[in-house]
Length: 217
Image (cartoon, helix red, strand yellow):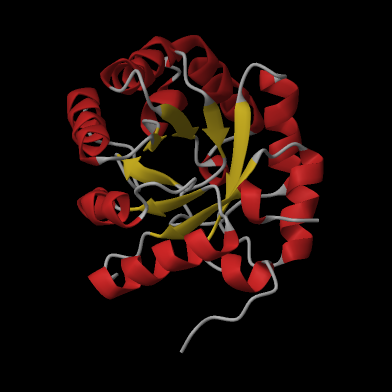
């Protein structure tokens, strides 16, 4: 299976340097990954390096906690779009889901969706922190708010993607939304199993090795 078109090639490390981002973008061009996913301060660099290629620039908003205000998330998303991002991975307000404040969660997501009408918006629900019922409600909130994807994890919390969570998400959203699995995906076999479970996109930092390549020294 050719995994490359499914992969958001990711480096969200706080210590990532400009050279790290240049390497990430070169690998994405070489392997034909769907996108690179970088922190918003690195969007201008990635956009310049990937201009004229088929590789999209993805960034994260309200990351990794999701607890920022809706207004700040919307501002961050809009600035990232202006800088060249075409995909926005936003973290929901997890505490609001746990409060049962679904309407507020919808408003939070919608603020970002409306701020970047030309971008693909992926909603990170951080499955490891939610009960099954909360996962279902979070997915439904993303659908109602007009998002394009639901996403399992930030990769910065207590656990990452599981086949079980991807199946639950697919059962909940049907074909209305796409699904991105991320967090702890380090092998081609696991990525393929997640795709078989219903994932449309894979977020990974070990993408090169997963696609049979070798990292440059």
